[in-house]
Image (tube, rainbow, N blue to C red; front, side, top):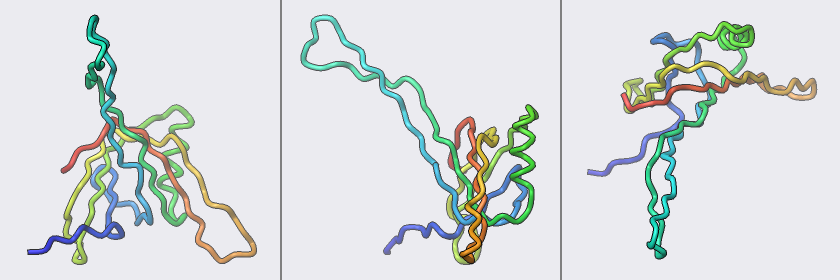
Amino acid sequence: MRQDPYMSFRFRVEFDNVQHGGFSRAKGFAREVKADAYREGGQNEFEHRLASHVTYGNIVLERGLADPYLWDWSYAVTEGRITRRDLTVSLVDAQGAPLWRWLVDGAFPVKWAAGDLDAGGAHVVVESVELAHHGFRKG
């Protein structure tokens, strides 16, 4: 039986189990284990590499500018009212059934941006929000 890889264009994003519109892009799902070097006295052929801690990159969500949910959340953070939210990003099949889920813990916006305004074009204005978080796991 042949197993094809999942398609990346079918996904859903929820904040605290509530979907706030659709997103055109979700990126930055990265996890890295830091490896520290340890040199042992008398051992000149190699250095030991020890795993020290895990770091996670920021997640970036992009969508057409439609409702003020992300703006309001981001603006509250700039005023010192930091509300961490849990995110669920689900990769879904053609029928909308979840295939793979990432559970993101304790996210909050660290950057909000809107796309360029261009009187000579006919493009949708895209907003993007960058989220710091405590990490993610498969759900």
